[in-house]
Amino acid sequence: MRIRNFMIPLPEEQSRWDSKPIRMQRKILPRTAAGGVALLLASPTPAAAFLSLSRLVIPRSAAGRELLLGHIRLYATLPPEKLCSLAKDFISNKNAAGQGDTSLDPVFDMCSENIDLYGLTGDDVRPGFVSFFGKHQGLYHELIEEPEVVGTTAVQYSFVKKWTEEDGEEKVWKSIDPDKPRNKVERLEFDEEGMLEKVSVVEADAPFPLQ
Image (cartoon, rainbow, N blue to C red):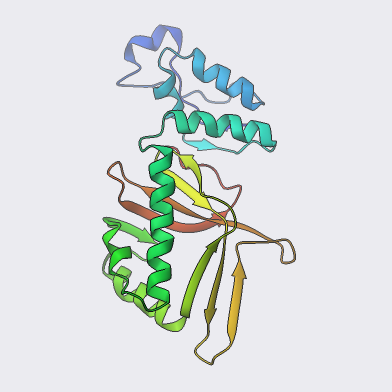
C-alpha cells in the first residue's frame, strides 16, 4: 500500500499537532496495509492521524483492503449499519420513482443543500434528475453486492440498472462487467447528519474518500 501526502506529527512538533500538523513529504512509508496501520497506531493521536490522509491508494490484496476498511469503519462518523441503511433507502427511493410509485421527492429529501448528484449541482439538481428519469422509463437498480463502507461517512456498492428507452428498447447496464471491461461502483458520501453530499459512479478501486 502506498500513502501519499500523509500528515503525522514529528516528535518535536507533537505539541502543535492539533493546530498545525506537519506534512511528511517524500519520506519512506510502509508498503503494506499492516505497516500502514502500524504507523497510524504509533501516532500520539491515531484517529486524527488516520483522518489526515489526503490521498490513499487502495491495497491490491483482499487482506490489505479489509484491514484498511476495518480502520476506516473504526473511525466512521456515522455507524456502518446506518450508512448501509441510508444507501438502501436511496436505492429504494430511486426504484419507487422509476416504477411510478412515487415522485423523486424522497430522493431529494435525502440530499443536503450542497448536493452533487451525479454532477448536477445547485438549481440544476431537481430538473436535471427529473429529466433523466423521464428519458429512462421504468428505471430500476439491483444490488450486485451488499453496500460497503469505504469512508467515515461514505458507502459504495456495485449494481445493475434496467430501463426502457423512449423508443421502447429495453436496456441493461452493469457497473461490473468483465466483457466490456467495466469495474465501477456507485459511491454515496454523506455529511455528519446523514444527508447526502455527493453521489457518483466511480472506478471500484478509486481512492477512499477520507474525511
